[in-house]
Image 1 (cartoon, one colour):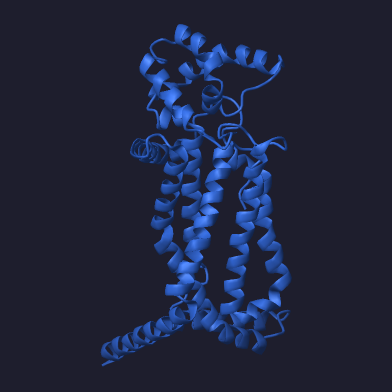
Image 2 (image 1 turned 90 degrees about the horizontal axis):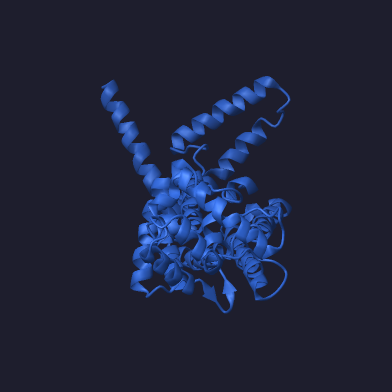
Length: 343
């Protein structure tokens, strides 16, 4: 599970992202810039297409994950047989023998229990950070204002806009969250001061780009730079995050139970895990700009479609049969190699 601090990495101050992800921000920013050009600044169409493309990139990894799960399901009866044979786990000798037989089984089957499909999850997390980066820092990575990434320049911008922002909200102690998004959200109020203070940064060209970008950031009256709350139509973002995440989790759980009836024995644990992520998404969607929640909604819907496609064209039973054939061929090949070496 991702920590709140990790997801809301730009919550305060003038952060322009985590250094390790900046090449990804630049790459994704260029991709979004191109898509916005193609779709005439229709931000939501660009983000939907971008999400589809990232899902397609991740599809081979998801397929590999399913194959790994199929292999695990196939050898599960053998694992249970060994565990039953050495049921006295309090005896160190039994535990050692069980571990030895399990390792021998994994070696025969060509299965690595440490490789349980974590790759797709890791890549999805990296992609998520890249997407969140371009959502948080669009002026720098989509609109191409590199100067705003300089700490001294960013601090000067903050010093310029903070008093104006505090006057807008009527709170002398208010802090600015999501620095670049705040600039976009209140640009009409900040424009004159920014152009006067930093004319070399906020040029006529950049101001025009910000105006154009802002014009595509509203959907059915929802400002994608705003953070959702319980008032107004923006509440739809967290609600749809919850519903689409729950639908995706239910579909995934149904498919797992259908393909692996033994999983029904862990029904309570699976139910808790199934509910945890949707509830987490619902909670986090009140802490991040609406654009992040919109990305999650689109991603969840695409995940649903992807699960149906995989069930239709790459069913686990077919994967298990293919895995058994490949395993038999590999085992015979190893046996032949051993015979040649001994001969």
